[in-house]
Image (cartoon, rainbow, N blue to C red):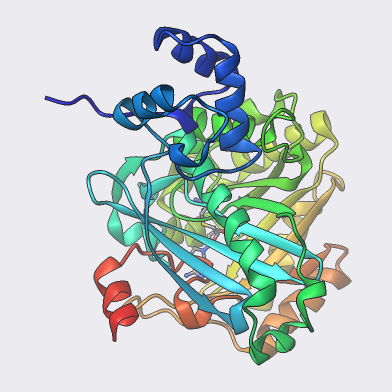
Length: 377
Ligand code: SAH
């Protein structure tokens, strides 16, 4: 029986060097291979012309450049938003979304197939937990986005102007942000998530700046505590969604384990230690958490123990089929924001992207059958 191929994207340079030596090759070949993967971003061993042909053959037999297979890419927003669906070897699927703005490009990546956290308003939660992604599988979504970004300038249509991208010159050459806000809970797969950051950050490789990563969590306190001592300055976003424990527990089962007071203590300790600004995500659901009393409660709670560097991101709900939940009205969203701002809490409304291709926040459901039908029809 053949063994599973070695995923070379999972290996940092020291580990790759060990592997290359185990293959009976001189150590410097590891550097060449590593550069081909992370600097030249080659997708196939055949394209690595500086490696000797016999070594390329050996790689083709025993190794793989990640294990994710790109099944399809859907484009929306005039070509500025692109969602990729990938299959894992067991045929689970995960999704990544590239979003291009004037002078800026963000990729939203998945850290798990499915998700064990069970948030009631989220499409991924409906899948339950399927499997953790490896570091290379997570990082590969970023490499996909970087390659896809290169196609964007030649592939825009008039819809792009609505998003203030007026021509190819407004599209950046390099990704500017990586956000761990796709499928899964990154802190539930902490080690692999964190290794993906190291792989992408390595100055000898992809060289992506630490400050341009944002990790988003449902509020797993041990993860926040761990990140506090991390030498890299990775941005932290917390999915808060309510200042009321009863409402929050109803929306997010994790709140029963880590209630709001414990979560905020961890966040305050994090900002005290790192001096970094934390973002709070707040999905606005009509009649659930969008009363202005809730805004007041939120502001009081965030400010009660003294100001710390933070920001609230309001996200009008992207309704999930059969959930019975709807988004707050546009007026209410703006009122909620103004109310927070007037109380001294910086707040913005997150711009919606990818609604037409089910690529918006919380809509990643890996619904391959639907995707393929749409692609073929
Ligand atoms: N598990 C992590 C990251 C994935 S979700 C987390 O929860 O933070 C990324 C963001 O999308 C989270 O803030 C999440 O609460 C939000 N989200 C989930 N479902 C949504 C929906 N239906 N509409 C809008 N935002 C949603």
